[in-house]
Image (cartoon, rainbow, N blue to C red; front, side, top):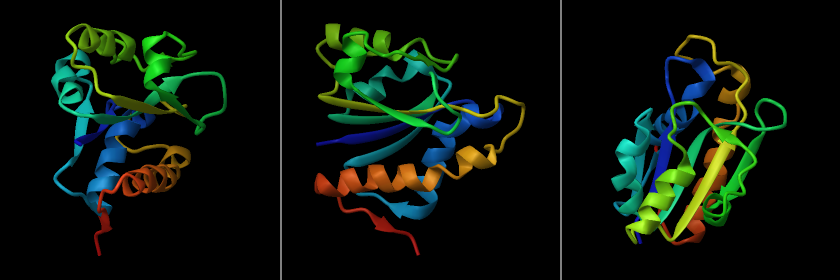
Length: 160
């Protein structure tokens, strides 16, 4: 079973780059087996549909516009996407995860499991660093996703 951890975002707009910073965080701290791929999707949107279609389980990490406070993380699953239940708007670089997954579903290539971890940004100011609030959320989200991967049988080790 191939698992993809896909981080999206624009590194030039502080918190908008959370998903990409998350991928970099994982790459610098953990060693992953061959069946777990980390991918910096940047702002490519629909151009990386093939990455999603080649995986059995996808973890998407991105900023979202939703009711709540900056730094709050929400989790959505595939059925939420496919049934249009997401009460949020994905970040502006996205064509829309619903559209990408619907296209994949029509082609009978939609991943079996899709989980979105969306975080509410504090700042979209120009800058290559996350706000301190969102930077402080990287470790907790990493622990959560690493825990799930280990529970699924993936051997993930910290880099010393």
